[in-house]
Image 1 (spheres, helix red, strand yellow):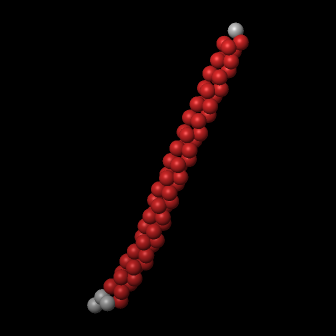
Image 2 (image 1 turned 90 degrees about the vertical axis):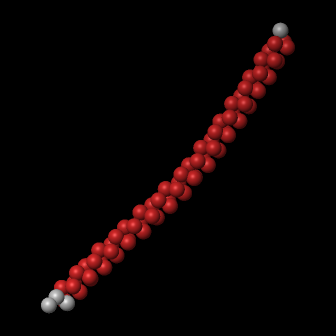
Image 3 (image 1 turned 60 degrees about the vertical axis):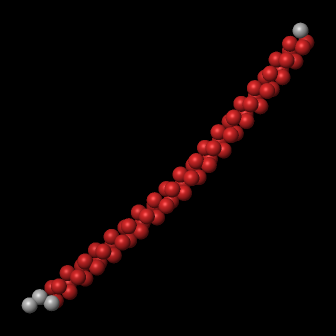
Length: 74
């Protein structure tokens, strides 16, 4: 009966080690994916900010063109 207990304890220890290893591997993968997603979101946000600035510049340029057209009307 003593060997049964030892075998059960060793099985439990092996199961715990395997489970913890799986949890750690999944955690690392999740962290890596989150980092990649954060990088993509940052790039997207930069594009949105640049687009907004360009739209503001276009509004200003169109306003200037309209003003110049008004000045040069016969």
